[in-house]
Length: 154
Image 1: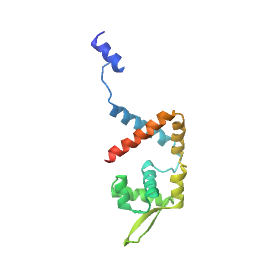
Image 2: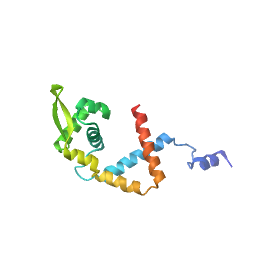
Image 3: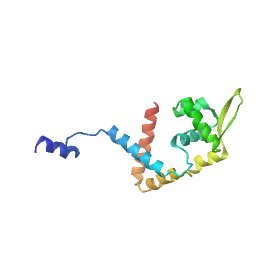
Image 4: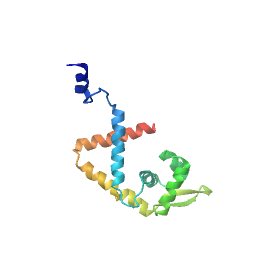
């Protein structure tokens, strides 16, 4: 067998170039994200807004700057996200009891219900696909993605 035939046999690519796991994961995450965006209904929250809302629901009232830090986005980005969430009735700004000049972002009952009720079309579509996986695939996927997220936050 020639070197070129061995390269093709090893990874299926005629030129022998291997694709790293990092590239495969990056591309797969991009494709999944794109497919989930396509399944969204009009007016559905962006992934960034949904994540920020979930952080407020789980963490309780917090300053917008603290929310931006937890979500690892710039303050102006978080200002836009909070404005959208407030406009749609998912959060409100309440006075900070420790600083009368500041406000806290708080989830409304509607925002809390959205996060805890899992009513998003995207989430329902993802759930449908996850249900098609075996229990071991599902467990591995969830634990792997959570570990990946934690590694990025470290």
